[in-house]
Length: 132
Ligand code: TYD
Image 1 (tube, rainbow, N blue to C red):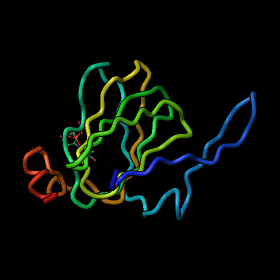
Image 2: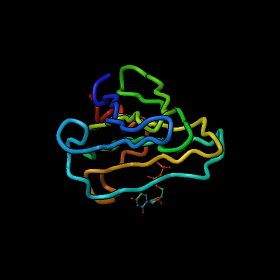
Image 3: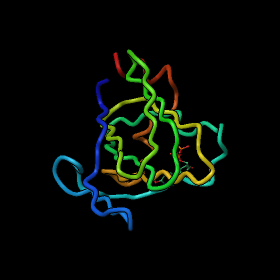
Image 4: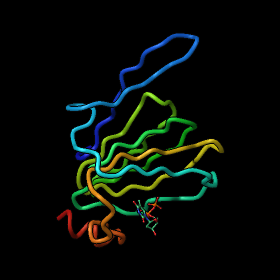
């Protein structure tokens, strides 16, 4: 699908403990201007339901799991984030919905821009129009 890439973070350690790194160039193709995180979300609640015009993001679950339903206006794909060394890079307008949260789920988001409501497309029909 256009606008998304699955990432696998470099991980160090053994059965005594693990450490994962997200750094520079390919794994982090933008300068981080904002970090936010989502937690204490009810299992079947649907978050997201929007696309961004320009924002680039890397999303990952350092704890727990959830499903990302992604839609580029042509196809829909579900990506499950269920391990701390796995991430999702989203670049440009991709409609996203997050659900199926485990009770301990924390979604970390690294973002290329500060919060800007004008970058959001919050209506699905508007998203389809802008994609055309
Ligand atoms: P929103 O992006 O709609 O969350 P989600 O897609 O996960 O459901 O944001 C929820 C609220 O938080 C909304 O009122 C805007 C606010 N918010 C900020 O003020 N700054 C931020 O960086 C983010 C991501 C959200």
